[in-house]
Length: 77
Image (spheres, helix red, strand yellow):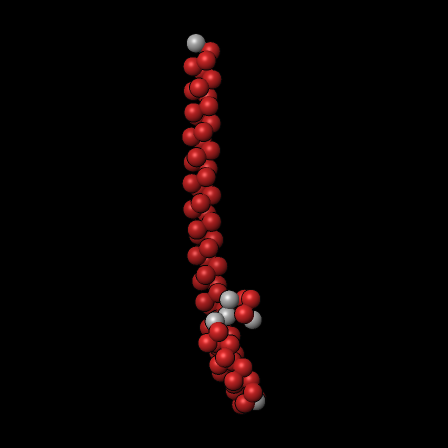
């Protein structure tokens, strides 16, 4: 679960509850749900950042094409 971004604190709490047995199933599920929600939020933030960077790259590509086109026109004259 650590590779999924689950905090060390949550892991410690989860495994402590796991060792206590079946009476902690609901609490363990709650921990997992909270961690999933936090991870989903991080994923969304990363997707938003990726979209922003992609947009900026697209703008730079357009600027470069425009610059190259203007440069070629200048060579033709």
